[in-house]
Image 1 (spheres, rainbow, N blue to C red):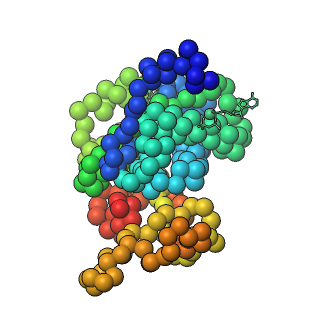
Image 2: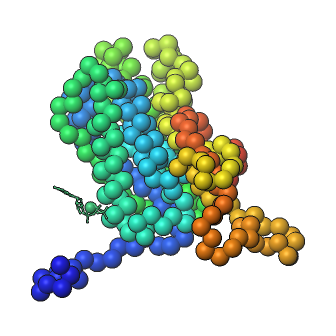
Length: 286
Ligand code: ATP
Ligand code: ATP
Ligand code: MG
Ligand code: MG
Ligand code: MG
Ligand code: MG
């Protein structure tokens, strides 16, 4: 095929490499989920089935793409963090983005009947996606803080908004008007005094979103482990004679006994803005 007179058209395809040694964050967002959620009768403000289905799809993405260390989800969106050194598809942007986005979408659709057994899928959902490159740990921390702060702000607003409608008998226009210009403390107060809802008692899944993390579970030779494994960090020592990254091994040895770290994938609903989450998981930003 390569030798035909037509093959020159290939030259119009431009390379689209992502910068080396940068963190990659891929964020997907449901297309027109305002409509999708209405047509599929999502509970408001938070349909737990829908959130669990998003988690399910994201978890499957992390099982498939082993260089994803962390994912954060809220509403109809998910962000995936790839390790800095990933060489997935030679870091070709379109290849990574389209494969991940379509894989997530397929998992969402395949998982639908399990999470919505009573509600048939009425039309095919779709997700948009983008990849952003970040150079520093600080920027990654700030990125995830930004998303979780967004979850909190939206959830507080939506919780009062839907209480005003469902319990207060307001129309959507009236509810928006009631909330215009209100600060956070006013919303908390309104929820408590008018509807007896203590915001702090609302599920962490709604307040904090979903944090899906690759946790290190044990260390053993890769040959016997399951496929979800990552390389351990280099072991530096002060002993000059032993400043090597891996144990010495014969060149081109077939019996590579590289130690890999066994990992599991856990779904949490915890704070990721403070230091604790990151300090206890240094492997996320290696
Ligand atoms: P776009 O295509 O621009 O993303 P959109 O309609 O998807 O448009 P978003 O800003 O992404 O707009 O908001 C998603 C909307 O989907 C939310 O505002 C909410 O109405 C709905 N939604 C998503 N997930 C849930 C859920 N778990 N429970 C209830 N509603 C949800
Ligand atoms: P990549 O992920 O790089 O695209 P690939 O395995 O999908 O890898 P392609 O060059 O896209 O490689 O080739 C697709 C392959 O899928 C074909 O070589 C063929 O083996 C198989 N295939 C696709 N469609 C059909 C079909 N309709 N009937 C039989 N085989 C098919
Ligand atoms: Mg959007
Ligand atoms: Mg959307
Ligand atoms: Mg959204
Ligand atoms: Mg192919």
